[in-house]
Image 1 (cartoon, rainbow, N blue to C red):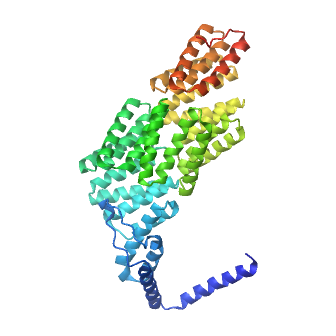
Image 2 (cartoon, rainbow, N blue to C red):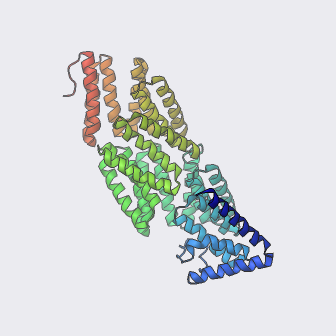
Image 3 (cartoon, rainbow, N blue to C red):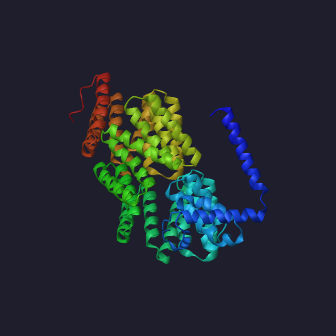
Length: 505
């Protein structure tokens, strides 16, 4: 655009605003009312008043929905008569439309605008919806503040059902941050309220969130039991969307315990349900996690393509939390392909996003992956420092599986540095934890690394035993790609130490 066009547009905007301001307030109100009526007529008539927020009923679509934000603006300027009717109707529809079209930034502000027009539990529910949008956008302090306001209003109104729903949301906000230790207690209290009020849908959601929390703590049996109960309720209710979300959670749990075939089937079923529900945000989360199965079973190209699809959706929806998680996972694709700089760049971006949204759990994952990458590039001091930071977060959060993983990385790094006594102690500690939490894949990898360590220590018979355990686990899991990589490391260690091959055992 040239300067003449820019100048014209600037003057035109000034003239328009000047003409608007010259109108008397009463005339301006009538013009806004007329604009409202004309737009409604073009759309086939005024939109019906939506059901109340606390009814749980869906808002039927209407032709005015894409223009609801503008219509709410006209209603706001049209005067007190419109304020009690059209303004609330279109403010609600504007928020709902932004939600359905994944306009995260608008969602937060539009739900907040609606809250200002409401009272009691209705106001509380609009605040809760605004909180959900703020959390998706990565603004945890605002999400927390809005959710706490909503909780106070529901308690004041004596609405125990929505008190439980909001308490569950409050727990979820702090799950990955510094308030993660309160998550279990908050979920249990929410679950009790939801059962008392007979809300089966949110009872099932609460069970699913508790299942994910127990899984992160290494309590696999309890996690699986809770997931089965959650899935049973969603299926009983015919709630395909939440069934899809829970199937995705189940897939992640199965993946974390090395059951890749079962995880793949769970993720495939989750995608079917999410697509039936038409929720691309939930679909993109499942895709990002599903990619891990492809990567772990030697399908690197499919893993990369799946991650790219997930990233594109996360970015279009403004989902910074999930974008950071997928970037961290994509770094491993680059590592396997020898693209070290790209792997490091992905991890640095992931760390920035995790810190921006307050996701301490994923921050620790990214730190650990970066430590492992630095170890492979012989940057041992930096690697050990990063590993210690990650381990501190995992211990603080009580996440035993990841404590085991981080201690295992420390063991490998100490071995690389030549600190054999400390490495041996750490290997045994990490293997004990991984066996306890049933993380078969991580145990297999660490047993093979331990075999290399034992070979360097001249403890050949112990090395044979460790190799046999690790290689047997890899074969059982079907991860022949990783077994091949570990085999090369063992062969190199045997050759370096003048020891006959131990692979046959």
